[in-house]
Length: 336
View 1 (cartoon, one colour):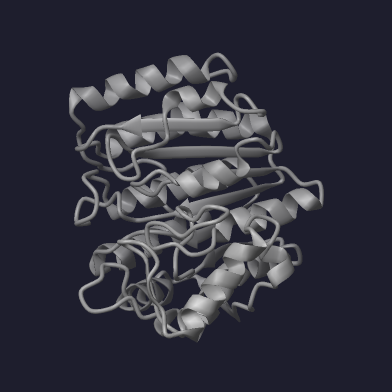
View 2 (cartoon, helix red, strand yellow):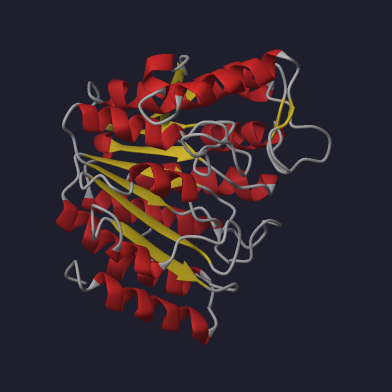
């Protein structure tokens, strides 16, 4: 089983400033994980996404503003999102890497894809940056797939809700968006009730869980709710917003997942869907050791060689109760 990995040197040149958690060392940690996973790795260089491709989800005026802002040496787009002159190229290749993997996997029946995308993307809206994100890397590729008539499931396991992704794609019945995230927590969005709102009812599945949630309940939610919904939706592609800030060692979240939990989640996806139609793209994750080990586990899981069981953490009772509440809402639209 091969792992096709897309990256670009510009990801290391995206300068967010001293002491910013979304720092270039994250890329190096993920790269160590890629090199340490023991799989047959095929490296490709992420190309620049075309402006016309960005425009399928982003306003032209916003794209021009980001380009101009970076060309003027950058600065803070909001209180969290900082860019430099080099960030423009990094943003183009972050989005381009996801799409390049999709095109590459069409010719590789025995491979899965992983994009080392930096800056991340799932908080980016049509017309504004947010939460370290400039362009919505995964939404761009989902929209391009939809333009070819293909159905897409986006699974977001970042500790933060992907509010930008949901906002951009929520009204498309051909896109399933599923997020398990800490609640209440930044960006204070991603409600259970969203499943009944918008023009594509049933396709926005939010599973908000409390601080302290560990792998036992997270795996239960994934196995009992997420995977059954994905199977019923029957997507052509599964795209994973692979944020690793749900790890117990991460300072920007309060979940208690272990690196092996990410391997379990990825293996469950690979068991439910053809691996060469699965692409994971880096979102959050700020503890470098956790990033490295979680990358290894994820790549092995997508290759189908990570354990589908194994030891994990124990959640507080409130976490199980939150899964029950989500299940009640999901059951109105899907058999779970």
